[in-house]
Image 1 (cartoon, rainbow, N blue to C red):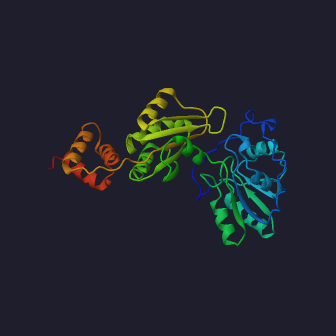
Image 2 (spheres, rainbow, N blue to C red; image 1 turned 90 degrees about the vertical axis):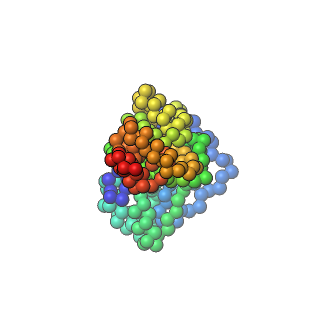
Image 3 (spheres, helix red, strand yellow; image 1 turned 30 degrees about the vertical axis):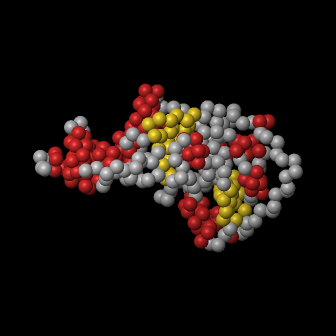
Length: 314
């Protein structure tokens, strides 16, 4: 992948057997003809599963564009076939973005109308594209967005957790040590957290979230907008236990974790008791992580106290 992009992408797909042309709603009969499309870059959201979620404005842009940049032409071709779109497709993905950007900017310089889509959902959200947007803006070209489907926003609306403040984290590391370190940096964030995760790693990630973030309310959303859409809610411990027993689920997954509970001031004795209990069942490192997760206190302070206790200090 390019250096500026995440090392994983979240790929919802248009299922061929879910939404056929005959299933699509009739377009409004009195709809005005679309305005001519001006030169520029159009960041265009596409469905995350149900093909009917393509907006009318996105449909107009994809029809009128001179070129559509997409991650995988095979994926986008399925959506184009449903809507009878014939606009030229060109791959723009992790591996060719650095090479493609100058070519795209040259086309914009020549007055081209270029749409950027991801395999599914809103481009740039854990997908390639931000450098292209940045360079197009810097060059003075018209850049706009056509908002639409997003697995992140869809999961937030279904989770039943606070949405007044949230943080999109994306994918955590695939390695447990790095993943736990990343979670440790998120413990005190006063917001709902939104993660993307792969099915094979879901149970392990939930277990690390439970250990690192504490017993928070959470939701696991998968196959959003598709036929087998499912949202499972519970505490992180409950969800981790369920998927450990049930095994990896099918489909694309978004994990939504509620914010930390309001901090309750603890006296030094209470903190020492928590540390001693944690040391009794875990290594120094894991005990520190556990107490930090439960209290939201600074790691260096807990580590210093835990080290003193483990060495017999007072």
